[in-house]
Length: 365
Ligand SMILES: O=C(O)CCC(=O)C(=O)O
Ligand SMILES: [Fe+2]
Image (cartoon, rainbow, N blue to C red):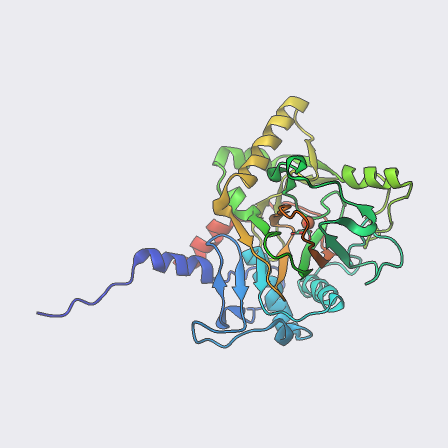
C-alpha cells in the first residue's frame, strides 16, 4: 500500500499567506528588502511581529543595531511596521537619541514631507534631559517631574477601555511612527496593548464602511490644555511642523484614513482624542463614537498585548493602530523614553483597499 503523503493543513497554509505576504503597492516604493527573511514571528494574525536575538527557526537573527543607519533596512522596517502595525525587538540596545533618529528616518524613507519633523509634545518643558523630541513616559509623572500623576489607588484607576488612543491625533499633522523603550521595568505589570485599525475597518459591514467613509471627526487634546492651565503654562509651539501650532489642540480628520505606505484603509477615531463626528447630530455622533470605541477596545482578536523585558523596543504606525498602557502598578516604578514623528495630514484615498482585500488579492496572484 502506498504511504499516504501528509497534506499540509489548509489552515496553516492560509495563515502563512496572511502573515508573510508583503504587498508592496505603495507609491514610489521598490520591491522592499524583506525583513521576513530573518528569524521572526507574528504575535497575532492581525497585528504585531517580533524579532529576537535567538533563532528558533534557523533563519539569521536581526538586531536593531543591524538596521540603524542602513537605509535599505530602515526602509524595509518602516514598511513592515506599516503592514503589521507594531514591530517588537526583544534585545534592542538603543539610546534615546538613536530611537529618535530611527523613527524620523522611517517616515523620511517612506517619502514624508520635509516639513514634518519629530513631534514636540505640547507639555514638554524647554531644556528637558534628552531634548525636546524625547518624551519620558512614567507611571508617576506626565512627561516631566513638573506634572505629578494623580493617585492610582486601585479604586481610583480609570476604566481601562478609556485609555485606548493613537498619539497626538489632535494635531493637524499627526504622527506616522512612534517608538517606546521601557528603561526602568516594574517587576511585573505595565504591559502595553496595541490594536489594528485595519482589522477594525475590515470587521465592519459594507454599509457601515460606506457610511464612515463620508465622515470627518474633530479630535481635541483637552487633557493637555487643562494641565497647562492648571500649571499656569502655555503649550509648546510649533510642535514639529509649521502646521502644528495654536493653544486649542484641535483638528479635523477623516474617519477612515488611508495609510500611504500600504495603501490600506483603517478606522481613524480613538477614545482618547476624538470628540465629535461633524456631519451627525450630537446624539448620533455620541452613539456612533461609543460603538466604534467599543469595537476597538472590546475585540481582543484585533489586539496584541506586549510584556516588556529589559531592552525591549516597540515601533508602531500611529496611522493604523491604537494603543493603551496598563496602569496596574501600585508602588513599582516604570519609566520609558519615546519619540513620535510626524507624517502627513490624514486623507482617504477612495481608490485604496482594505488590508484583507489586499492580502487575498496577493494570495491569489
Ligand atoms: O506607557 C505605555 O505603555 C504607552 C504610553 C503611550 O501611550 C505612548 O508611549 O505613546
Ligand atoms: Fe500613546
